[in-house]
Image (cartoon, rainbow, N blue to C red; front, side, top):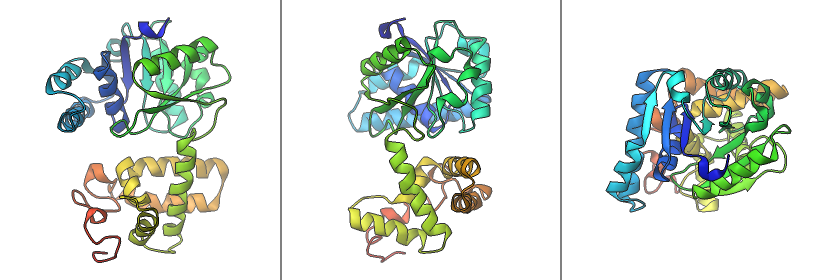
Length: 303
């Protein structure tokens, strides 16, 4: 299969990233199917996509007509057999659990055509952790997106069993889709940017978990010194505290590092209260209108 032959995309998981990926591919002319386990999740996904598309129109990135055309190319289903029909490429964005990812890929291996390329959007896991469960490890790699609302960088990370043809097709396809491809020579947890980013967020978590400084002061320090509009805890609210917790907890378990476990326990308090960040209206800050966006925050006038 050539990159030009990839026309039908399956997005597994209609969460924050699944929505952005679906809209981007639809804007580039692909037909997209979003699969999730509940209709209510798919309804939220479509509503989220409409919201993103509307913001693109306001920013004049696309016209209203282009937004409507892209939305029309996106379908949803809770039926796996229907989702897998005639799919050229799969993009998986389910929670950061290698066992769950393996089960999902195993299911779709039995349903997708033999030509279908499987990709994972995992943030920190390695493709080799669940490659064998895909049933087609030679046609499997990581195609990892960041925030498509602000950038078009993607990481392409094969595992040792990925064949060169798959790597080349995905690389060419990324370019066709207007994406900036970063090719990893070998597997690395967190890819390139996320490896640096995880260390940044982890250091902020450690400061808070050890009660060195308040969440607000940690953010104020970063924002003030680096002249940035948002700090690490504001960023975690945007990413989703549950995602930050799952990643931190997983690696704490894998490494046995006591500080990482303390950081995971600190984040878990927010998860247990349902305070997951921007998407729930409350996390480290309250939304809309979080205090770090208000005039005087860095100076400490409203902390």
